Amino acid sequence: MEERSTYEITDYNNVDLSRAKDLDIDSEPTNDRDTQWRPMYPEIVYGRAKNYWGGGSFTSAEVTTTADFYNPKNAGYAACPAAAKKLQVWDKTAFDGYVDGLTATGHTYHDIGMIWAARLLSPTGIFASENSDISPSKPTSRHLIFMTDGQTEPFDLNYGAYGLEPLSKRRWSETSPLTLTQTVEKRFSFACEEAKKKRITVWVIAFGTTVNPIMTQCAGPGRTFSASNAGELQTAFLTIAKSIGSLRLSE
Image (cartoon, rainbow, N blue to C red; front, top):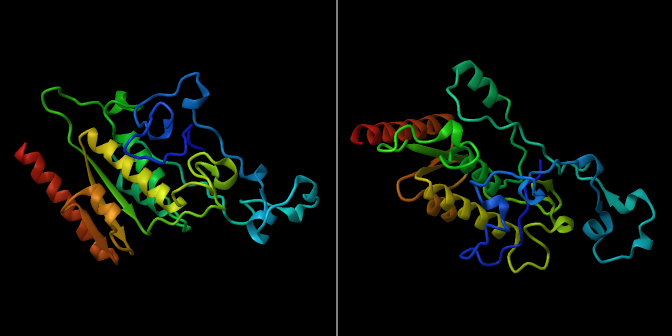
């Protein structure tokens, strides 16, 4: 599905959450369509191929054949990710099956992952009925482990959570002072800070890639890990688990 309404932000120190519904991790959808998510229809979305592949502009009269258009799905640029899972106690077999069913296809967008992770964990948001603090005197300890296998790598020809970027112009346009990569990274950083405002501790694991300054700033000192193989990845998770356990004992 596509994200709910937002706008092209140029100043991330002054974000208007009344307009950037996607970055408001707590608000619930209402009858106002701007607050609602919308379906993705990659089969019926087409970009103007001459603009993308041939360069230059053209008038509608020049669009006369199917060669003048391209369909993102047929071109391999429309990915529908696996369904997310809500917070739950996992059975190992079920968890292994879910993880094994995930497929990485490139073109990494960190912002949408952080936005949904924050929504799922927030004690005052959409899932508050399942995730509120058990005791007002002892707030629940919340930890978000953000794992990525790549650097930020958006592609403007992709059809994704914000539509077909150059045509939809929902969060970015070709005239923006920011590149699409900068836009994604700034939205990731903003969503990360919103998560931390909810007393969520953020950890970052870079698997098969490096921890960049954006990730380090998000998680903070001592909460980032790089893993190049399965053994290092297991070590990173064990380190995080021990840290969480120590925090619980100290509290």
